Image (cartoon, rainbow, N blue to C red):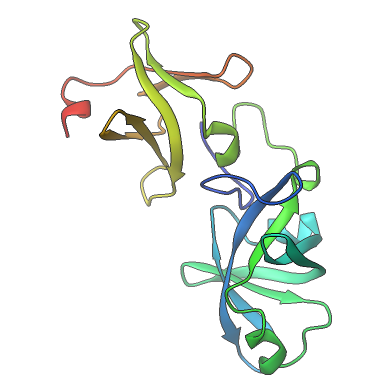
Length: 184
């Protein structure tokens, strides 16, 4: 599927030192030191595949090892090695979780992390430039490209019937949109 962001790719930008943000720690959960994480996108269980992440704020991060991760309501429930109490987990609230881009698992052909789409130029099949992708929003039905042109913002569903090709090497996404979609 186009634009699939598994695992936990950021919806916008990257962090310090070639890292991408996987999510933000919201609060402690339970008595074992688990934390609830607002994931930027993707499957929290893939955090275990990344294994070692950086936790903190911008340039002040500490490496942590992911012991376990699973779905919890609309986000993730993550357990880091060495964080064993609600008090220790509470100290992480508000921190970002970063991973080195090189540590992210490879995706199947035709799938992309959100951060790989941000900055690409969206064009119609006729060559009309609609603008750059400012961010990607994860939505229930399909992820959405947020394309900004001047003071206008367009939301384009990342579905095969609209997105004809994604070409990171040429910096373009080619779309075929139904009449009126850009007027919404």
